[in-house]
Length: 111
Image (cartoon, rainbow, N blue to C red; front, side):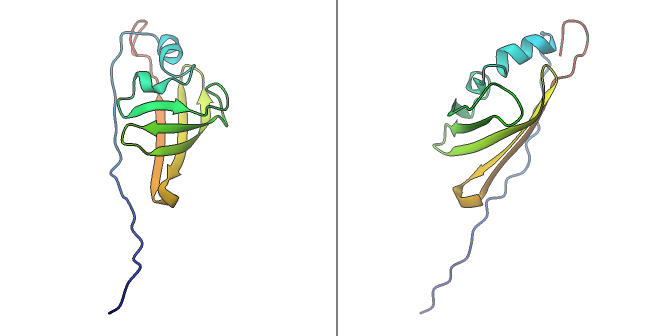
């Protein structure tokens, strides 16, 4: 009998989420990103742990997911009150986490 070692790859479709919020970009930034407490608003996160700094370029942390996976993440292209990117992965390279957050004002009170 032969045994085959076939590598597996997890491919997930990109998820796009948007919301209209009755708050200014600076209010959203302070409430959701500045203190690296993303679990307050992301329903898939149990916590953000091992945070190396505030929400800034090069910040490293671990997304502790509610499904039990820990995903090391690094932030880049951070622009306070406007945007940030994150990139990371886990499971020996089989899992990739990539995100782009953009905060766009709609009017003086909504984003």
